[in-house]
Image (cartoon, rainbow, N blue to C red; front, side, top):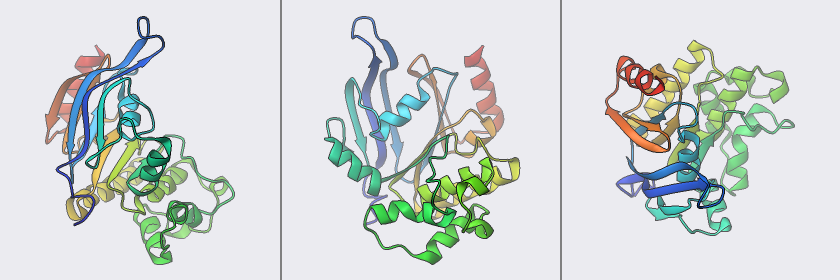
Length: 247
C-alpha cells in the first residue's frame, strides 16, 4: 500500500500545548490544540501574526517538541520519539519548504533537488529531478547555483527539493511568499495536482487568502487556539474570516 494512504490521517494533534518559558509564567504558543488532517488532502493554516501557525507546523513535523499532548505523523506517534527517529522520519516521511529557502550554495539547482534522496540513500533519477524542476518552471536553470538565481527562483528550487521524494506529508511555510503571481500559480497548480492525482498530503501556513483558497480546508488560529475553519474555501471566505480575526 502507498505509504501516503496507509493511514486515514496524515497528521493528528491531540490536545497539544507548546509553552515557551517557565511553566507558570511561560507563553503558550499552542494552547490545547486538536487537529486531524486527512491523508490525501491539503490543509492550510492561517491567523494573525503570533497566533501559533509556525509552531503548529513545526510540532506537527517533529521539528519542535510539544509540552503536552500527542502528535501522530502518518499514523506514527512521534511525541516522545528520539532525535534519531525524528531525523529518519524527516528524511523519508516528510518534505518541508521553509521561508528562507535553505539551499546549499555550492550545489546547482539540480544537485540541491537531488540532495535529500542522496542523503537518504535512495536512487536518484536525473529525469525525475529535471521533471520536478520543469514543473516549477526552472527547466533551464538546472545547472545554476543559488547565487545565480533570483529569490523567487530559489524558493521554487526549495519547493522542488521538498517534492522530489514524494513524502507522506509535505509541510510548507509560506511556499509562494517569494514568488511572482505567475510562478505562484504554477506552484499552486502543481501542489493541487499532487493532491488530486497522487494522494499527496499537504499542511501549509500562508498569509495569502488566494493561496489558502487552493486548499481543501483552512484552519484559523488565534492566541494559540483553533478558532475557526472552512471546508472548500473561496478567497472571499478566507479573506473575510482572516480580517475578522485581525480586527
